Length: 243
Ligand SMILES: NC(=O)c1ccc[n+]([C@@H]2O[C@H](COP(=O)([O-])OP(=O)(O)OC[C@H]3O[C@@H](n4cnc5c(N)ncnc54)[C@H](OP(=O)(O)O)[C@@H]3O)[C@@H](O)[C@H]2O)c1
Image (cartoon, rainbow, N blue to C red; front, side):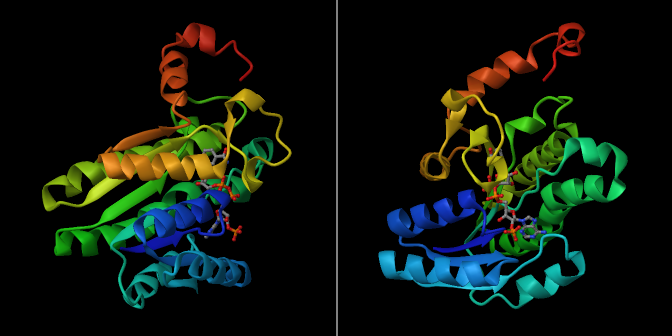
């Protein structure tokens, strides 16, 4: 398997790269903006697992560059993980359109732009796997992060529609819904520690779901039940909560 990770300097992206290299013998292509870091990570993966690993430049919001980015990939991937993301600052984004735009573009538009190009190639070949890292934040709007949440809702809906479209063509689309994960994105945030998992646990859950042929995976597993409760709180009560 040739696995392409988009937004690969992410802690979750790197953990998924290690898991697939170790368990599947996958050759890894790490794509993101921080090439210096990615080259070191690629050497580390090659040394540990005796697979091929390389680093290439990729910017999720360079839409005009996406067709050439994919055209120039050699070899083309069998599987792709989109893990780029930007949480941003909700308070700032309410006043500053630039911040709002960065949140929506990184989490949704960037994913839709590159994944449509990859989907067309996979569809033509009649095989392929697309794994999108969305978030439980997309399941209900909360005052503390509704712009990030809205961009992840869009990502989740996009992945669902893509799965529906590509299913007859034997292309798999997996939606990953993490809760709280200990990464650079959450560093410094006050989180309920019992609900926080490590990026390696996300990678385990993604790999297990891949093997089991699942479409949607909550990680950690308890988020499926927690979100079931949160989704069902009546709006008349929910709007009064300081979440
Ligand atoms: N951590 C959590 O609790 C949590 C929960 C739910 C979902 N998620 C999602 O999981 C994914 C991975 O996040 P993480 O937790 O691993 O955080 P992270 O380490 O901060 O990773 C986010 C990555 O996105 C990359 N990125 C941002 N803008 C980009 C762009 N324009 N082009 C390419 N790459 C870009 C960043 O690359 P640079 O290094 O170049 O900035 C960074 O490596 C994200 O989609 C996030 O929304 C995380």
